Length: 325
Image 1 (cartoon, helix red, strand yellow):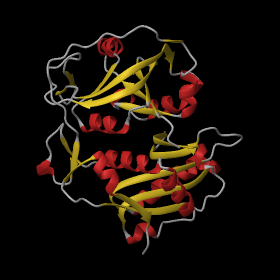
Image 2 (spheres, one colour):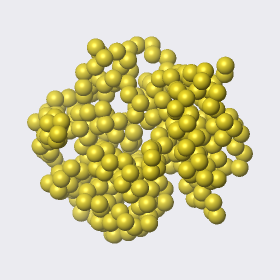
Image 3 (tube, one colour):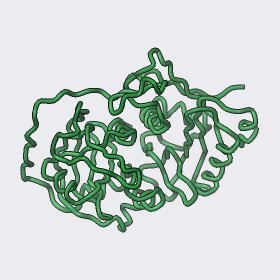
């Protein structure tokens, strides 16, 4: 696989959008969602800005950086969200290379995957939305190429850090150390399945022979009317039918209700959904009794050598295997 992913990054106001464009720079807040976006989007991926139900410009990610003590650093002012009245700033940053200039409404069919998630998952409260390869192909042809140089942001001297995650809350120290949350596990599993060998193993466990792993893409989240699938594997270039595998991820022990929910997602997507997969740390006995032939149970394990680990370290310690009684 190893294809670049494409994300739309939510921007909170027009002023911040103009600053993002001016300096070809994206920023994420000092929250777990900000850290999630930062670890999920990689160098070489493509991004657009999302504001006012429009996608703005296409950029390639050149570099990532997490900046220590970034509260008063340019270009964005700290922002306070209501009703929580919490103030956030932007330590997690992506340095971007402009590729194309455009302003495209999300109502176009080519943005359907993102638009559905945006509509059904609470609008712009999310930091980012992953789009599929169809959308990336579309935005790679609209508008015009950008030839103008972007402005250089003048910055005082600063230190950087690598965000880490911990099991015990007493070790939490945002934005440098966050408690290990389900969204981080989802990002780890998505990256794990983006390797051909791991994806091939998943196909074997699921008993799926008809899919070419080189024609698959692994996407984060798929919204449905009554919930959302954590990870969706689908054909990047479907012909005639669009076959899919849905994956639910649970940080702890999966319950009977988790299998019921997964079964609903499989049913909702119809006969194009080849299998539902539930990945959890463990499963209750009653939950496994709900395991139908349309579903597979996988157990994940992370060897926490130390209580605080980076995303890259966690990825090396992640292991996923078929659950056995």
